[in-house]
Image (cartoon, rainbow, N blue to C red; front, side):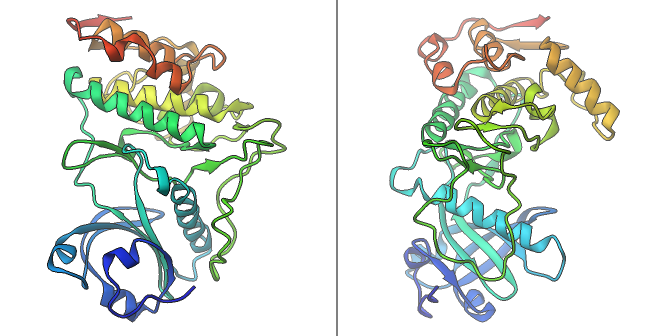
Length: 335
């Protein structure tokens, strides 16, 4: 992988994959502020140090992993590379609800991806009249992914950001998989045959002896958003699990909690806590009080159906009459 020139413009950096020295990275990017972090690494707000005044004023988001001697480092870097190679296959026909990645950069000390800067996390307890357009766009984005053999595997409010124009954007493809629609096996996009040096083996689970596209029997993701079949590690269609997670996410954006949480403060600090929660998801009965239109409630019950065979696909949910109708009054409901 060739290094970019010392005076690389943002357009140069956004269009390729690079191996740089730490000094070259510092010369090209100004790290302004850490805006997110976790066990996997951190996310920074950055600016390009080179280019025209408008280019250097433009914010970028950078997801960064420190390359240390820790045993977990290769898996973290490989997860970052997995994100880049999957989302990069969408670059020529990008959906507005899917994050736009710019570049993958590796240095002796860091691995990082640069992407568009999105200023805020999607809020919760939002008016349905406001959230409805978000839901339609996100459903369209997920249907778009599935049509291209991609599942996200970790849809939740924390992975949805808003642009300045309030376009919702699905981010964090660290758990995502791209399937070969011919044989079902997770595939490596052919356009990404570049070897990434010294970053170890992939942490992304591979379904055991897949029989059909999108089939898996693995359980990973964020516990509160796992479909019943995924939480138990049963053989399942990963697209249907994405739809479940998206439905739970929509409910939380409106109500402020998931449909199976007793209250917003419910904690899942033990296996017993999770088992009680997953028992509720298996039964499929929402708990507590919620307020939404009857049209949205019907759509969400189709998306959050405990039987994956009955659960709608993203495309079917998007075709529901709710999205072409005006809202009717929303009344508090207990079920």
